[in-house]
Length: 93
Image 1 (spheres, rainbow, N blue to C red):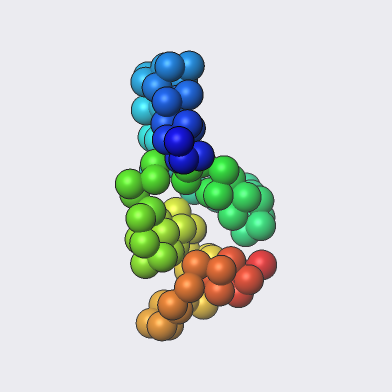
Image 2: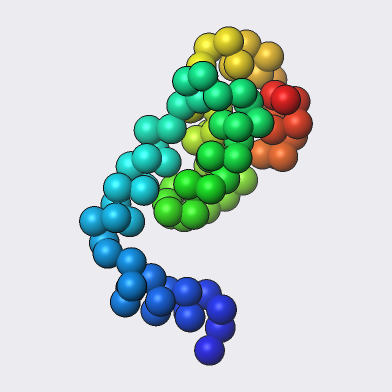
């Protein structure tokens, strides 16, 4: 049995679906608010595991990350060709 399968079985048995949905919604509606970029990044990385189908590729992960940022943080990326999530994080810190 793979680790992924074990996690899947564990979650199905011990993690209520309504809590999973709540965490997924928390991820999808995440904005930095008063968080620093690094705090926002940590929260993003913690919550993205609840919505794996939303971040299946690097491009989708970057899109969700940038979508949640407020305008003051997005200014440096407008029109930029950023190709990796890790690059976004280091540039925004």
